[in-house]
Image (cartoon, rainbow, N blue to C red; front, side, top):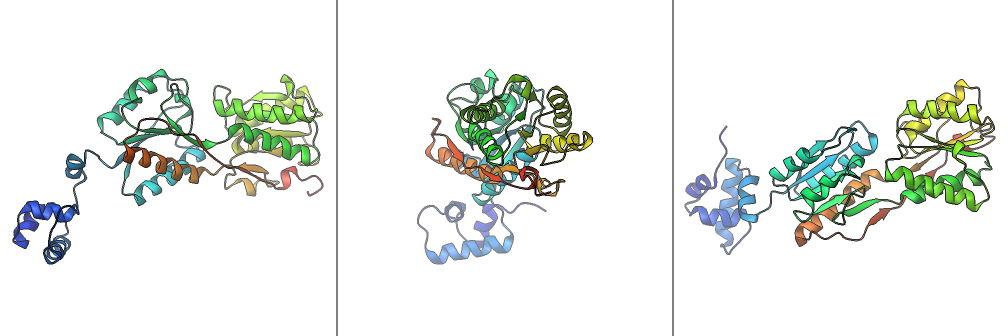
Length: 337
């Protein structure tokens, strides 16, 4: 089926195609009678506006570029859902590019977005934090919003306070009566993992609870790494009475390992994760966690990006940090299981 053109509408309406263009783009002065006749004919013929044609006039494609990390990651997918729905509500579409976890040269992917003439870019890929290519390709070219810091001072940040996340976990465990606390970080190449560790360490040390190196194990954000890290921690120090895993997937591995080692949760060892995955409330026992508003972060990131596109601003705006909160369940409630 051929696309209906404005020239066909003009022929049916008995007016010039310039007048039809004014009506369809809500520009210029046209009598109400003519406007209604043109819109009625356009509707009858099934006219669908051409985004490409509009972009030639407005110099904007109403398309946003999105550079993501692992698309199997719940955090990333929920961010995408929130961002995409907000973009759609504001009549914009997305081009999504997923980087591999071991990507070291994102130049071709970022260049591809530039070739698509996107109006702005969202970044949600931790592996870009240390890449110099990001600044070289994007800085000063178009507005950029990220949930991770990247090299150079050109991105607007929409995130949650990663240091406060670690502090919240530490405070919660102390309040629940735990005093010999270990932590399993994500990969320490990640700034989020570093800041969560910093926040937890500060709270523990402020309460005269040490966090020596042997109580810190590095994972890589998946359940198996949480399992293996727990085995190592408890073999080195069987008296550990609580573990903060920096995401819920690793926390699931912690629960599995504790069960295999005959530790009772939460009485022998409490466990808290982070993210509040849908499955976390169905763990055995249900997992205490820290809820990060990932969907809302995606929405806000798009709002910030569209605002910068409208202002034609390449300058970074002040960071927006959305609040997180403890979701307390049985895995840290001594005497509840």
